[in-house]
Image (cartoon, rainbow, N blue to C red; front, side, top):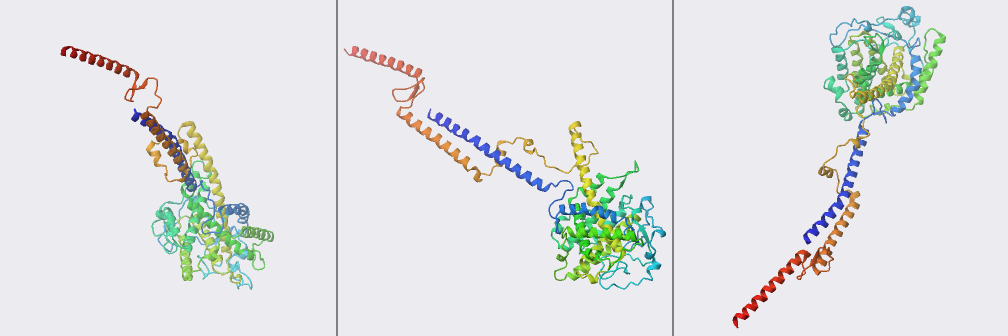
Length: 556
């Protein structure tokens, strides 16, 4: 009886503690889910929506987005003017690194040269040869003669004085999808990425594009800047191609979201590098701003006075916007360590080689825009790193200024296109979700959605076995102390009750249920058993007395 009572009270105490323990486990599981959710929210970035500071720059992504919303319409208008829409280059140079196949014969690959009548007379080679090209007293000349490159140059400079080459109207040869690709294009980008700063990436192109984040974190800033400029330019060019994609079926130019997602959108580092390259270009224009405003130092000569005034006004507005946004990049943090001059010269050598790789591009239109944008980047680097903030040393050719602003415009259009593709992706994701709910499947042609955190994760968790649930509990967590205290009190109370009942039971003072009673020896027995025992005892007594009587009679 005592054992059964003790067991019952022990089970009561244990069962009383289970709800508290389960409550604690549930709290721990909820906390684990919340921590997991927070971790996933940190890691899963919305599609093409970078936020926070731009790595290796001095501004945030939202700053650049705001600046671009102001600069984009100004740049779009500026590059249509007569000074900035013409650029002279030689598209028929031989590839200096390998034997390249002749230029492709696709219609969309060809470049339409500017008509001779479109070019102002004083830009032509015959007129330039008679112009005095001595440097001005307090500034830079936009029409300075150049060799392939000077000490200050980061790339091969297109020479306006050369009889080779021709002027090209950039508006008539827009950068967009041409059909050029395959082995030839892969070879170009492979060579560009191999021509990195101090062999930053020695693996093949595929490995370079997919396994670089950890390597970047362990390299010096100069190497990271070099790589991010190339990656940003690559992302920008890919964005242009996907933004102006030829639909072969309809013959119309469309935005190709699948193309963009595969090449740029599903790779956050490429989007970030696109923004980084844009910050560098904005910084170069901001640094050049005081000299762009000084029209006594240079003139945007076009042969049309009205057009010249319009160009000067637009250039001033672009320069003012670039300065007003504040510092976007600090060029003084580069090439400051011991041996920095050697580092800087090697930086220039690699970038010059990349400018020559552009002569190996098999598509004529791709070669045009590749040369122009590499020249624009090289001009920006020249402004930032070649003159030590001394305006007396500034020397830029007209071709460099045209390349600088056209490259800035191409990057600006890429940043704006990212916003458009983001909106398309969000719309596509909503349509796919509705299709899934309606049809139970999204269809085979669905664009792969960026992983998103399920807000109903807690409700979708399957039930866990009891032992697995306890594995989520940290027993040493101070938040469990109250549960431990309450459980301990319940157990102690149960033990005390058991001991008290046992003591009263032993003394015969414990109130028994109606069907029980104490026997003559103080044991607890059922009443029925007690009555049987009494009857048996009476019979035994009668038998004993009868035996004693019979025995007495026999003795007499």
